[in-house]
Image (cartoon, rainbow, N blue to C red; front, side):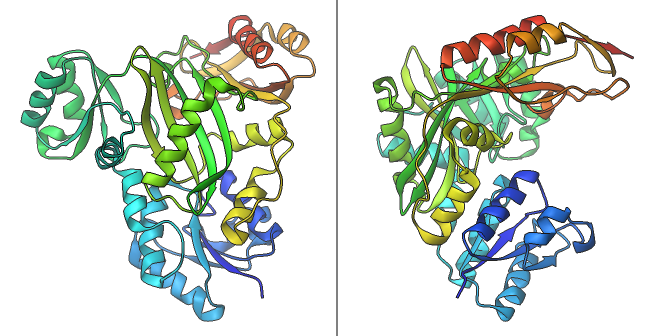
Length: 409
């Protein structure tokens, strides 16, 4: 009999449509729990769901639990999964109440609560930035006095760089604290600032053992990229994962998965390397955003959406990564907000990158620009691959320097 998997939030992003596709391809019965009316689901998603229940709010654990129980009443549930950061803890809570296997509430909470996460990892000897949970200006001042500036201030359960601030002194600290409502008792996380290059380590694991691993780099680091529209930020996924220079990173990442009790799951871990050496930043028990898995698929002759499904449903791999290509994404930003009116250098870009471009987005004349904080797959972007990582980087640099966007309004 096919295993029955309930997927929470399949309607939220296109990446989750692919996770559902993977589940169907490995022979699972797949039911969805979402917010979108069934009649308005994307056709490709709707066609792959064996059942679907709409709930008033995906952030209501009782509503999701009741939906899961309804689904289980039709066919016994074997698993309940999600790909969404905001739903990982809620899904774990429902999973626990139903007595199903998967990430525990403890592990899910550690992957969401940044101070608790770092406390657990420091206790296991994993190098992290000094950090603390705070809910008052007094606690912030005390942390700043002990560790000095600059500091990082973020929501306690931050997603990516959203709501994250680098503060260089007391005035900036107080301004950021006001935005996060710390001065009104809201909880937040404060950390020492770590100098260095930023990247990420993504995995699939089975019973705590990493079975797929991928390594990528940010150019420049995320906070800088999110706050300066003059930059053309890049994400570069290396095909040199087996190089000895990454051994320390892989060892740390595998240990993090074990310490946090992440059994059979996807993970997305961010790290820094600088004057103080390698430092853990944070981890999520879910796939990376920005459709990064697509880059890994293109670079490794691999369907990672299918691999994820094989791992969670059957506890085994379907294929091995080829490491044939390095892949990357580069975004080119308009100099101001407004409406696109044209491009300069586009022909040169396609000539220089012939045979490398996998996907791209060039908004038509009159299309409104997106705010730069929306992420890496907004405004103008190109996704490329090449067998040589350094040549991939040179091509992305060229796009960022040569392509100019004209905006009116």
